Image (cartoon, rainbow, N blue to C red; front, side):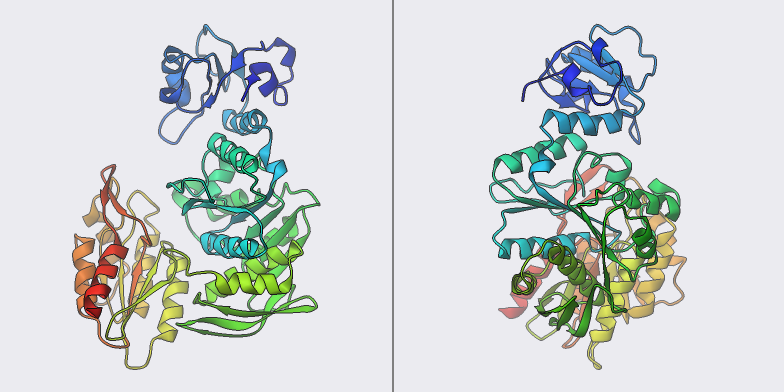
Length: 487
């Protein structure tokens, strides 16, 4: 890409004529990544201020710097002062890469839970329709010919705009992306032009970052309050925050509901550990569903996917086939079976709301003579108020449970366990300092018709301890156990 400084900032500052036409090779948010000819944007992070690293950026060859107006002294290169460098980074990145989202049909999905499952369902439907589709989110980048990798739920504005440009140039037509509240609050998607946005639900999460549920809600709401009339908002009206979003949306709304007859709802449905079967009413049409996904929350995710693709005008048969062909979402209610008939369910759940939904669903599906065993932990350096709640929920549904590490990060594991224990009133559990040992113990004790629910890590391949990601996988241990039990 070829660009000059004055071209890149023309839409965000008034005194454009005073900005020189300095050639810009690339845009950087991290000083250590800067190379000669790059533009360095100094942003204020959660642990450090990018303005403190301007000398390093200059030493590495930065040809220009964007700041928030803080006094950084006289610089040997052009300095452009803006009120919000994060917001500026979004605009500049979109300008640098030619606003690629305008060339794509972009669907953004936000909510506390269900983003990945809903994105996977929509992607399956679009693939069935013959659309060249990319899926972006916690599973990485899922796009033919592109490396999957591991990313944040939503990558930073510069890498996101670069990826969208690469996808558009590679003839992709549709992008389905998860959008986190952090990404919205930090303007990472401020200059992505969404054709449709989806709201799944909202429950307490990331309060260590947002502070209150109201602030958390308002961060999510921004995705719906700046939509053009040509876009569509698909909103779960069962959720109390969804009801509020319906009033706030600046685009036409399609409402989905498990409980009420609205735009998209189940006319008839049956859920078992084998999947979800039913008929969805969509206006004058009916859609037959025979999905491998399980749980009431996946019913909601299916409705969101149907609402999105109905809004796009896709044929009902295509929507049905796309949902029915959708494989189990990786790490989300993923099921394994032992040789003697016990079931193992893996889920990425790590919030009280997700625990309630997963555990209540599986509890209702366990056979009369079977027991439900749960293995879980709570992440370190995250909202501690949810730990006793999650412990209490596990105790409520499980016949027996194991408390284990789940990415303690920089926090002491014993402290995390003590927080969990404050929510418990029984002794139907064991505490392990090694998650693998606990999982092997739980697996070895399973009997026919028992269900082991393993929560928190999904298909993660590490334990994060003291800033180091140590190799670890629940899936590998489970697959090895099932293979040996079948041999």
